[in-house]
Image (cartoon, rainbow, N blue to C red; front, side, top):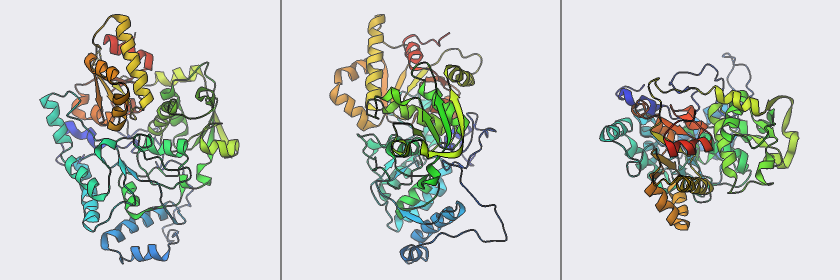
Length: 481
């Protein structure tokens, strides 16, 4: 833990699901991944020989030689060294728009703040206006006690510096802050085949899989360096070879699977190697739409957090699978069958991290990654219908619905009465990050949540529930028996 950080804020310093840490903050012994999204093909390290060097254009070499500024040269040196480490053959030009997971102002972020301040002082900007992950706290919409507010300010003392820095480097407005940058309301959905360099694991996962863009699972900071350079090393998931599937996943459940548990099972089994999934396209009416994309979002985010998967293929559905079908499978692929029994076996492994004396939740978290418009509609009507059926005016449990501000506004503009009634019933709407909110150590000692997100479950003490069970808990305040 960084020196000077209060003990109760120590969880705020592990925001990345690329670290291989469990919910207790300790290394997960079952996590074995490079965390770039695919197992790279690396030659054996020989200290007597220099590592392979990628070929640079004259312009790139000039930047590396400092002809366009000292900070620019440092950025280029970082990209080149990173690429050489993974055997990249070249740098490629990036398109679309960047997205960064450099979003929390913890003391651990001081080196990155200093680094990127030097870049901003030299006048560097991202190659396009970029989106950013949600802020780690929301003191406007989420009820917090004075003690909890102190925990937030001491846990994220550099948040204003981070937000200021993004303005200088070309970040977009705070109302677009979201881990779901590819939603139409946010508008960062590059075209199929576009090279980008993102770091938010669920966005990488969805971008590669649902949009068909090409990005590795970059680290926080590396994403922004690539954005400033407008280039990224070419290796891994950016290559045709790296996008091939090493696993065939046969889904043989009797009905529509629990998407979060399905993704968790795939992530734990495949770790970081791309899977080719069959048997689920029938739940999408032939194509991915705004009305069903949340199913893939829930599954994909779980593969990326319970493992380190940066790309999956779904037969007859996702872009690469539509283009190449089962030709995406490598010759010696492995097979994993997931049926009802396997779903329940995986679900049964999820631990209850609450103290033994805690029997009831005191918060419900809906949406991680952030909710889509359709999800907000589904949950909104579901909650209000359940209240009416029970003759209740208020929900029994403080419930937070997480979404980008622009998505919330979309729902509000089209369904203001529903939004009013939900707020009157006790639902709050926030654009913060549920993992940061629920994972801050001070909160996890006093707040015991239930969630429909397998990602939130993985990185907090929250208990994972199916949607129907979560709705029941919201109504009653009691865990299902």
